[in-house]
Image (tube, rainbow, N blue to C red; front, side, top):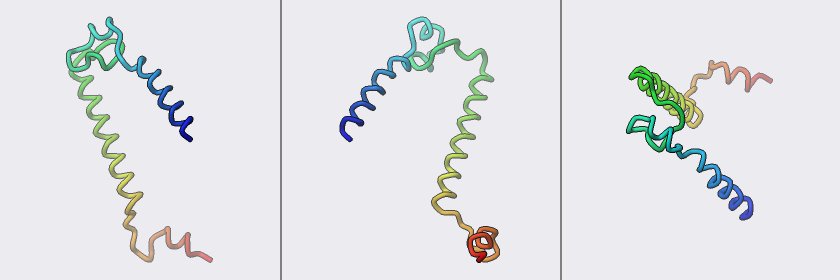
Length: 88
């Protein structure tokens, strides 16, 4: 078990080099994204709006998914799941 943990951590540390931006990409990025991403920077403010909207949708989906997995809230005896689970 300990070997697996060290191997996993070792692989993760080796992969971290790819996460750090190269000097050319870092120079082309806006100040807020320097050192984080590769490639061309955002072309307009619409790019930021699209990304942040997507982040909010993903976070809301994650929140509600976890919430409803932990506490579903269907208490009605007429709910479809009760019909399926209790149908002998």
